[in-house]
Length: 335
Image 1: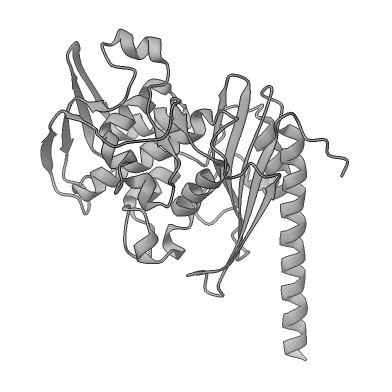
Image 2: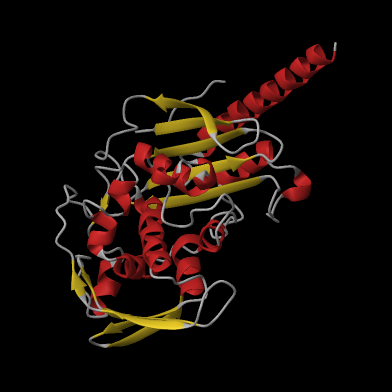
Protein backbone atom coordinates (compact mmCIF):
# COMPACT_ATOMS: atom_id res chain seq x y z
CA UNK A 1 0.00 0.00 0.00
CA UNK A 2 3.05 2.26 -0.19
CA UNK A 3 3.14 2.92 3.56
CA UNK A 4 6.17 4.72 4.93
CA UNK A 5 5.98 4.57 8.73
CA UNK A 6 6.48 7.84 10.61
CA UNK A 7 9.40 8.29 12.97
CA UNK A 8 9.39 5.98 15.99
CA UNK A 9 6.15 4.38 14.82
CA UNK A 10 4.83 1.50 16.91
CA UNK A 11 1.58 -0.39 16.48
CA UNK A 12 -0.32 -3.38 17.78
CA UNK A 13 -3.41 -4.89 16.14
CA UNK A 14 -5.52 -7.40 18.03
CA UNK A 15 -8.03 -9.48 16.09
CA UNK A 16 -10.63 -11.14 18.30
CA UNK A 17 -13.08 -13.74 17.07
CA UNK A 18 -16.12 -14.59 19.18
CA UNK A 19 -17.98 -17.89 19.30
CA UNK A 20 -21.24 -18.47 17.42
CA UNK A 21 -23.38 -16.88 20.15
CA UNK A 22 -20.85 -14.08 20.82
CA UNK A 23 -20.65 -15.20 24.45
CA UNK A 24 -16.99 -16.21 24.50
CA UNK A 25 -13.69 -15.39 22.83
CA UNK A 26 -12.84 -18.31 20.56
CA UNK A 27 -9.66 -16.94 18.97
CA UNK A 28 -7.28 -14.02 19.40
CA UNK A 29 -4.42 -13.00 17.09
CA UNK A 30 -1.90 -10.24 17.72
CA UNK A 31 0.02 -8.39 15.00
CA UNK A 32 2.80 -6.02 16.07
CA UNK A 33 4.87 -3.60 14.03
CA UNK A 34 8.49 -4.05 15.09
CA UNK A 35 9.45 -5.13 18.60
CA UNK A 36 8.21 -2.19 20.65
CA UNK A 37 4.65 -3.29 21.50
CA UNK A 38 5.64 -4.52 24.96
CA UNK A 39 8.12 -1.74 25.78
CA UNK A 40 7.32 1.06 28.21
CA UNK A 41 10.38 3.14 27.32
CA UNK A 42 11.09 5.34 24.31
CA UNK A 43 7.67 6.98 23.96
CA UNK A 44 5.02 9.11 25.66
CA UNK A 45 1.59 7.47 26.12
CA UNK A 46 0.08 10.83 27.14
CA UNK A 47 -3.67 10.72 27.81
CA UNK A 48 -4.18 7.11 26.75
CA UNK A 49 -3.36 6.09 30.34
CA UNK A 50 -6.39 8.00 31.63
CA UNK A 51 -8.35 4.80 31.02
CA UNK A 52 -6.44 3.17 33.87
CA UNK A 53 -7.31 5.62 36.63
CA UNK A 54 -10.92 5.90 35.50
CA UNK A 55 -11.36 2.12 35.49
CA UNK A 56 -9.77 1.83 38.92
CA UNK A 57 -11.91 4.60 40.43
CA UNK A 58 -15.12 3.07 39.08
CA UNK A 59 -14.07 -0.37 40.29
CA UNK A 60 -13.60 1.02 43.79
CA UNK A 61 -16.95 2.82 43.78
CA UNK A 62 -18.71 -0.23 42.38
CA UNK A 63 -17.29 -2.36 45.20
CA UNK A 64 -18.61 0.19 47.70
CA UNK A 65 -22.08 0.02 46.16
CA UNK A 66 -21.99 3.36 44.33
CA UNK A 67 -23.25 3.93 40.80
CA UNK A 68 -23.19 6.52 38.00
CA UNK A 69 -25.26 9.12 39.90
CA UNK A 70 -22.72 9.47 42.70
CA UNK A 71 -21.50 12.91 43.77
CA UNK A 72 -17.87 13.18 44.88
CA UNK A 73 -16.42 15.85 47.17
CA UNK A 74 -12.65 16.14 47.49
CA UNK A 75 -11.72 17.87 50.76
CA UNK A 76 -8.51 19.74 49.99
CA UNK A 77 -6.63 21.99 52.47
CA UNK A 78 -7.45 25.02 50.30
CA UNK A 79 -11.14 24.19 49.87
CA UNK A 80 -13.55 21.50 48.75
CA UNK A 81 -14.09 20.42 45.15
CA UNK A 82 -17.56 18.93 44.61
CA UNK A 83 -18.42 17.27 41.31
CA UNK A 84 -20.79 14.64 39.97
CA UNK A 85 -19.18 11.37 38.91
CA UNK A 86 -20.82 11.82 35.51
CA UNK A 87 -19.13 15.19 34.98
CA UNK A 88 -15.80 13.98 36.35
CA UNK A 89 -15.73 10.99 33.99
CA UNK A 90 -16.84 13.10 31.02
CA UNK A 91 -14.11 15.66 31.68
CA UNK A 92 -11.50 12.96 32.22
CA UNK A 93 -12.18 10.61 29.30
CA UNK A 94 -14.04 12.57 26.64
CA UNK A 95 -12.64 16.08 27.17
CA UNK A 96 -9.33 14.60 28.39
CA UNK A 97 -8.93 17.19 31.13
CA UNK A 98 -5.70 16.65 33.07
CA UNK A 99 -6.97 17.91 36.43
CA UNK A 100 -9.98 15.59 36.19
CA UNK A 101 -7.54 12.74 35.55
CA UNK A 102 -5.52 13.62 38.66
CA UNK A 103 -8.69 13.62 40.74
CA UNK A 104 -9.63 10.25 39.30
CA UNK A 105 -6.29 8.84 40.48
CA UNK A 106 -7.04 10.20 43.96
CA UNK A 107 -10.53 8.72 43.88
CA UNK A 108 -9.11 5.32 42.99
CA UNK A 109 -6.34 5.58 45.55
CA UNK A 110 -2.69 5.02 44.68
CA UNK A 111 -2.47 1.47 46.02
CA UNK A 112 -5.87 0.41 44.67
CA UNK A 113 -4.62 1.50 41.24
CA UNK A 114 -0.91 0.54 41.35
CA UNK A 115 -0.58 -1.93 44.21
CA UNK A 116 0.15 -5.68 43.99
CA UNK A 117 -3.59 -6.39 44.18
CA UNK A 118 -4.60 -3.21 42.40
CA UNK A 119 -6.48 -2.69 39.16
CA UNK A 120 -3.44 -2.76 36.89
CA UNK A 121 -1.88 -5.91 38.35
CA UNK A 122 -5.20 -7.76 38.38
CA UNK A 123 -5.53 -6.93 34.68
CA UNK A 124 -2.13 -8.51 34.01
CA UNK A 125 -0.32 -5.21 33.50
CA UNK A 126 2.96 -5.60 35.40
CA UNK A 127 4.93 -2.67 34.02
CA UNK A 128 2.21 0.00 33.85
CA UNK A 129 1.81 2.64 36.56
CA UNK A 130 0.62 6.18 37.19
CA UNK A 131 2.90 8.15 39.50
CA UNK A 132 2.83 11.89 38.88
CA UNK A 133 0.15 14.46 38.16
CA UNK A 134 -0.53 15.86 34.72
CA UNK A 135 -0.72 19.68 34.36
CA UNK A 136 1.59 19.91 37.38
CA UNK A 137 1.74 23.71 37.68
CA UNK A 138 -2.04 24.03 37.80
CA UNK A 139 -2.29 21.05 40.14
CA UNK A 140 0.32 22.38 42.58
CA UNK A 141 -1.37 25.79 42.51
CA UNK A 142 -4.35 24.07 44.17
CA UNK A 143 -2.03 22.98 46.98
CA UNK A 144 -1.56 19.41 45.76
CA UNK A 145 1.62 17.37 45.46
CA UNK A 146 2.82 16.47 41.98
CA UNK A 147 3.30 12.90 43.25
CA UNK A 148 -0.13 11.23 43.28
CA UNK A 149 0.44 8.92 46.24
CA UNK A 150 -1.81 10.93 48.58
CA UNK A 151 -5.59 11.16 48.34
CA UNK A 152 -7.50 13.71 50.43
CA UNK A 153 -10.55 12.87 52.50
CA UNK A 154 -13.35 12.17 50.01
CA UNK A 155 -17.12 12.21 50.58
CA UNK A 156 -19.33 10.02 48.39
CA UNK A 157 -23.06 10.63 48.21
CA UNK A 158 -25.68 8.84 46.15
CA UNK A 159 -29.46 9.25 45.79
CA UNK A 160 -31.72 6.24 45.50
CA UNK A 161 -31.79 5.29 41.83
CA UNK A 162 -32.77 1.98 40.25
CA UNK A 163 -30.72 -0.82 41.79
CA UNK A 164 -28.70 1.65 43.89
CA UNK A 165 -29.80 2.68 47.39
CA UNK A 166 -29.32 6.13 48.89
CA UNK A 167 -26.07 6.25 50.85
CA UNK A 168 -23.17 8.38 52.01
CA UNK A 169 -19.60 7.46 52.89
CA UNK A 170 -16.45 9.33 53.81
CA UNK A 171 -13.18 7.86 52.57
CA UNK A 172 -10.29 8.85 54.88
CA UNK A 173 -7.17 10.60 53.64
CA UNK A 174 -4.65 8.02 52.50
CA UNK A 175 -1.07 7.75 51.25
CA UNK A 176 -0.13 4.87 48.98
CA UNK A 177 2.93 2.76 49.66
CA UNK A 178 3.03 0.56 46.55
CA UNK A 179 6.41 0.32 44.84
CA UNK A 180 6.40 1.10 41.12
CA UNK A 181 9.19 0.88 38.54
CA UNK A 182 7.92 3.94 36.69
CA UNK A 183 10.07 7.09 36.83
CA UNK A 184 7.84 9.20 34.57
CA UNK A 185 4.40 10.68 35.18
CA UNK A 186 2.97 7.46 33.77
CA UNK A 187 4.37 4.31 32.20
CA UNK A 188 2.73 1.77 29.93
CA UNK A 189 3.08 -0.19 26.70
CA UNK A 190 0.90 -0.70 23.65
CA UNK A 191 0.33 -4.24 24.88
CA UNK A 192 -1.03 -3.07 28.24
CA UNK A 193 -3.24 -0.44 26.62
CA UNK A 194 -4.67 -3.16 24.39
CA UNK A 195 -5.27 -5.39 27.43
CA UNK A 196 -7.25 -2.67 29.18
CA UNK A 197 -9.34 -2.00 26.07
CA UNK A 198 -10.00 -5.73 25.84
CA UNK A 199 -11.08 -5.85 29.49
CA UNK A 200 -13.38 -2.88 28.97
CA UNK A 201 -15.00 -3.77 25.68
CA UNK A 202 -15.04 -7.57 25.89
CA UNK A 203 -15.97 -7.72 29.57
CA UNK A 204 -19.03 -9.91 28.99
CA UNK A 205 -17.03 -12.45 26.95
CA UNK A 206 -14.26 -12.87 29.54
CA UNK A 207 -14.29 -15.53 32.29
CA UNK A 208 -15.46 -14.11 35.63
CA UNK A 209 -11.99 -14.37 37.17
CA UNK A 210 -10.50 -12.14 34.47
CA UNK A 211 -13.16 -9.43 34.51
CA UNK A 212 -12.84 -5.92 35.86
CA UNK A 213 -14.87 -5.25 39.00
CA UNK A 214 -17.55 -3.48 36.98
CA UNK A 215 -20.22 -6.17 36.89
CA UNK A 216 -20.55 -9.95 37.05
CA UNK A 217 -23.64 -10.83 35.02
CA UNK A 218 -23.99 -11.78 31.35
CA UNK A 219 -25.29 -8.31 30.44
CA UNK A 220 -23.70 -4.88 30.45
CA UNK A 221 -23.72 -3.41 33.98
CA UNK A 222 -24.72 0.24 34.64
CA UNK A 223 -21.13 1.18 35.53
CA UNK A 224 -19.75 -0.45 32.40
CA UNK A 225 -22.32 1.23 30.15
CA UNK A 226 -21.60 4.53 31.91
CA UNK A 227 -17.89 4.13 31.13
CA UNK A 228 -18.25 3.02 27.52
CA UNK A 229 -20.47 5.98 26.65
CA UNK A 230 -17.51 8.29 27.30
CA UNK A 231 -15.42 6.59 24.62
CA UNK A 232 -17.67 6.39 21.54
CA UNK A 233 -17.73 10.04 20.44
CA UNK A 234 -15.14 12.09 18.61
CA UNK A 235 -13.98 15.30 20.31
CA UNK A 236 -12.38 17.01 17.31
CA UNK A 237 -14.28 17.00 14.02
CA UNK A 238 -10.94 17.18 12.15
CA UNK A 239 -9.36 14.20 13.92
CA UNK A 240 -7.53 12.39 11.10
CA UNK A 241 -7.34 9.00 12.81
CA UNK A 242 -11.03 8.95 13.68
CA UNK A 243 -12.04 10.15 10.21
CA UNK A 244 -9.97 7.43 8.50
CA UNK A 245 -11.51 4.63 10.55
CA UNK A 246 -14.98 6.10 10.28
CA UNK A 247 -14.69 6.48 6.50
CA UNK A 248 -13.87 2.78 6.01
CA UNK A 249 -15.76 1.13 8.87
CA UNK A 250 -18.88 3.15 9.77
CA UNK A 251 -21.82 3.49 7.33
CA UNK A 252 -22.58 7.13 6.48
CA UNK A 253 -26.05 6.86 7.98
CA UNK A 254 -24.60 5.94 11.39
CA UNK A 255 -21.72 8.38 11.67
CA UNK A 256 -21.87 10.83 14.54
CA UNK A 257 -24.80 9.14 16.27
CA UNK A 258 -23.59 6.04 18.14
CA UNK A 259 -26.29 3.85 19.63
CA UNK A 260 -26.55 0.36 21.08
CA UNK A 261 -26.22 -2.28 18.37
CA UNK A 262 -24.89 0.14 15.75
CA UNK A 263 -21.48 0.32 14.07
CA UNK A 264 -19.21 2.05 16.57
CA UNK A 265 -15.68 3.11 17.39
CA UNK A 266 -14.54 3.40 21.00
CA UNK A 267 -11.25 5.13 21.69
CA UNK A 268 -8.92 7.01 24.01
CA UNK A 269 -6.26 9.09 22.31
CA UNK A 270 -3.34 11.10 23.64
CA UNK A 271 -0.97 13.84 22.56
CA UNK A 272 2.02 15.17 24.50
CA UNK A 273 5.53 16.35 23.67
CA UNK A 274 4.74 15.78 19.98
CA UNK A 275 3.84 12.11 20.57
CA UNK A 276 0.45 11.07 19.18
CA UNK A 277 -1.05 7.87 20.57
CA UNK A 278 -4.36 6.07 20.12
CA UNK A 279 -6.23 3.09 21.52
CA UNK A 280 -9.30 2.05 19.49
CA UNK A 281 -11.91 -0.70 19.63
CA UNK A 282 -13.86 -1.47 16.46
CA UNK A 283 -17.39 -2.84 16.87
CA UNK A 284 -19.26 -4.23 13.86
CA UNK A 285 -22.76 -5.45 14.86
CA UNK A 286 -23.15 -8.10 12.14
CA UNK A 287 -19.76 -9.71 12.66
CA UNK A 288 -18.27 -11.97 15.32
CA UNK A 289 -14.89 -10.33 14.75
CA UNK A 290 -13.67 -7.42 16.87
CA UNK A 291 -10.51 -5.38 16.40
CA UNK A 292 -8.36 -3.42 18.86
CA UNK A 293 -5.84 -0.98 17.37
CA UNK A 294 -3.13 0.59 19.54
CA UNK A 295 -0.51 2.80 17.92
CA UNK A 296 1.78 5.76 18.45
CA UNK A 297 4.07 7.95 16.37
CA UNK A 298 6.25 11.04 16.47
CA UNK A 299 6.13 13.92 15.65
CA UNK A 300 2.86 15.79 15.35
CA UNK A 301 -0.91 15.44 15.43
CA UNK A 302 -1.03 14.14 11.86
CA UNK A 303 1.64 11.47 12.30
CA UNK A 304 -0.87 8.59 12.47
CA UNK A 305 -3.27 9.65 9.70
CA UNK A 306 -1.80 7.44 6.95
CA UNK A 307 -1.33 4.48 9.29
CA UNK A 308 -4.96 4.78 10.42
CA UNK A 309 -6.17 4.76 6.82
CA UNK A 310 -4.18 1.63 5.96
CA UNK A 311 -5.17 -0.19 9.15
CA UNK A 312 -8.83 0.67 8.53
CA UNK A 313 -8.56 -0.86 5.05
CA UNK A 314 -6.97 -4.01 6.49
CA UNK A 315 -9.82 -4.36 8.99
CA UNK A 316 -12.45 -3.68 6.35
CA UNK A 317 -10.95 -6.26 3.98
CA UNK A 318 -10.82 -8.82 6.79
CA UNK A 319 -14.45 -8.24 7.73
CA UNK A 320 -15.56 -8.47 4.10
CA UNK A 321 -13.55 -11.68 3.62
CA UNK A 322 -14.98 -13.18 6.81
CA UNK A 323 -18.52 -12.32 5.72
CA UNK A 324 -17.89 -13.78 2.25
CA UNK A 325 -16.60 -17.07 3.72
CA UNK A 326 -19.63 -17.26 5.98
CA UNK A 327 -22.00 -16.87 3.02
CA UNK A 328 -20.06 -19.51 1.05
CA UNK A 329 -20.20 -21.99 3.92
CA UNK A 330 -23.93 -21.36 4.35
CA UNK A 331 -24.50 -22.01 0.65
CA UNK A 332 -22.55 -25.29 0.84
CA UNK A 333 -24.63 -26.45 3.80
CA UNK A 334 -27.83 -25.58 1.94
CA UNK A 335 -26.72 -27.83 -0.93
